[in-house]
Length: 231
Image 1 (cartoon, rainbow, N blue to C red):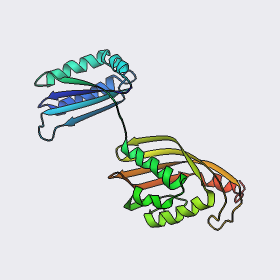
Image 2: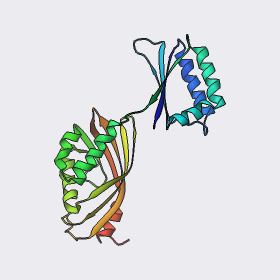
Image 3: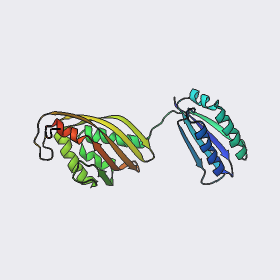
Image 4: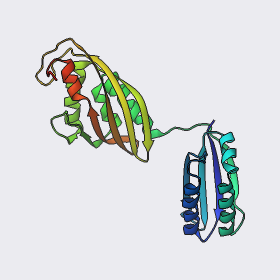
């Protein structure tokens, strides 16, 4: 179970505290068990600083606390604070990265359910799509829907998300797909051939919706499977 430790402290030397965290990151390289660290300052009280550190489990957090580098940094941190820092230990009950959810819904509802109009609720009104296989590398939502509808109707693809990583407002996806060429695609009549391939996509989210996307698929591999090129 993911474990998080919240460290609450008061200091007028926040910049020094931030530098101290850089020192800890450098000195524990290859040793620490912490996977994520956030330091925030209270907008209403600039002396109130909170650090949130994430670990794979409580047991891994205990291993981290036993590092001599962690002990040294803690003592130096206490010296920078006006009072003894407080610690809150949290077992994470729920962890949902909401931008991941909206990206998954795009694959499930637009591609796999073959409902291109579902993009209206998933994407922002000023959504932009960048894909070298489309008519332009910068398409708005309406034109992207038109061209993606042709692809979906031509191949009836089923996409599988192989991995998905989120950071900030960006979500990156590694995907595989399978389908069959059952309709006209870019002037090419249906061949009834099975197709498969892989690709990557990056999404920028805004306000709980997808605002922009970049797509890269193995287009040459697709054309070879359709017999359109001989390489």
